[in-house]
Length: 223
Image 1 (tube, helix red, strand yellow):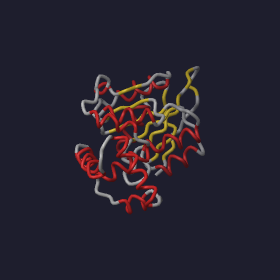
Image 2 (cartoon, helix red, strand yellow):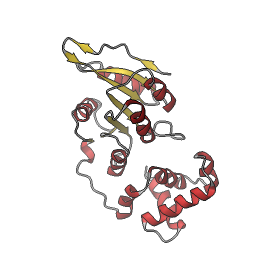
Image 3 (cartoon, helix red, strand yellow):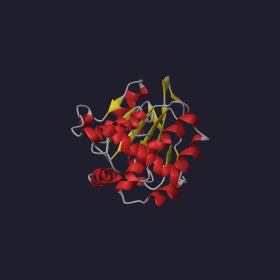
Image 4 (cartoon, helix red, strand yellow):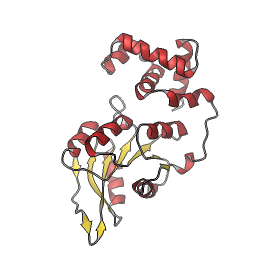
């Protein structure tokens, strides 16, 4: 359910930065909102549990910052997919991605999609405030546990070359989805799905789709 916070644009002479919180777990949204409300220069613009609620809220309020769960609605558009929608409706506001994934690849993917920060959920909750301050000031924030991380697997590093749609299909392959099922999920033709699969194979440097599927199965299993 869409939740709006009461706010004023200023307290004295201090600007209050309005923060959108999008996460499909109510307890997580509540915890983040309580943390934000302890600060002097941040306040909650509104909370949302799904894509539709985010877009509905943006019609009424334009936030200054946004926090998105990367796993928002696993079987529908994710937090990364929402970045473009938010920027389209609210302008290029800084967006912080929250994620359960602690690999640098996901951070790189988030930044490629237009986010300004990436924070793993394993970090202390108060790190959220530091991350928001960093991206608000125009810098890029990466979770401390990932800042010095490098890919050891050269194939995994090439996953960053995949487009957002290609990466989605890559993940579906690892979860056992057929081309027909993938086509139905994303409202694509089988021909288009097969074209995506071809480009995935080429970009990852594999010789066959069997190798792609095997790598995808291992990749998804590790998550």
